[in-house]
Length: 217
Image (cartoon, rainbow, N blue to C red; front, side, top):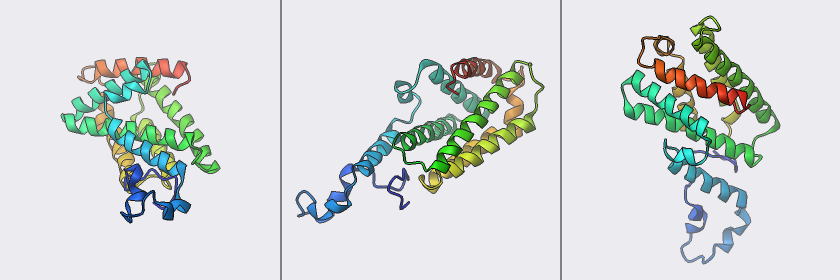
C-alpha cells in the first residue's frame, strides 16, 4: 500500500528499516525529508499487533468481559471445526483487525467517509449482537438467514472502511472469518441446545449482553 498511514502486512516491520539503506549514511540525514513520526509510530504499532494478537496477550488490552467473550468464540470455533489451529488463526484475525482499526481511528487516519462507515459498522454490529442474544434466549424467532445477512453486511462495511489501509492478506482474513460465521451448519450448531457448542454459546451471550448494556458493542 502506498498510503503513509497503511497498516499493510507487507510494510517493513522494523522501525529502523528506512535508515538501513546506505550503510555509511550515519544517522540517515539524506532521507530525513521522508521521515514521518506518525509513519514510524504506525509501523511500530503494527509490528506490536502482530506479536500480541493471541488469546493470552489480548487480555492485557481489553476488559474481563470482552476477554471472556473472545474465549467463548475460540472454544466455539475449535469445537465446530475440530481444529485448534483454525480456532487460533480465526481469533488472531479478529483480534488483529480490531486492534488495527483502533490504531487507524486513534491516529485519525480514516477519512470522513471511512469514519462514517465505522459508525455504520458499529450500528449494524450492535443489531447483529442484539439479535444473536435474543434468538439464543428464545425471545426472538430464530432466523439463520437474517443472521447470515447481518454478518455479510458487517463484512461489506468493514472491507469498504479499511481497504485503503490494510493489505490484501488482511482483507482476505476478514472474508475468511465471515465465511465461517455465515456457514449454515455453523449457525445451526450455535442454536442447537444439544450441541456441544451450547454451553459456550450461553456464556458468550451473557457476556455480549453485558457489553451491550455498557454500550461497548
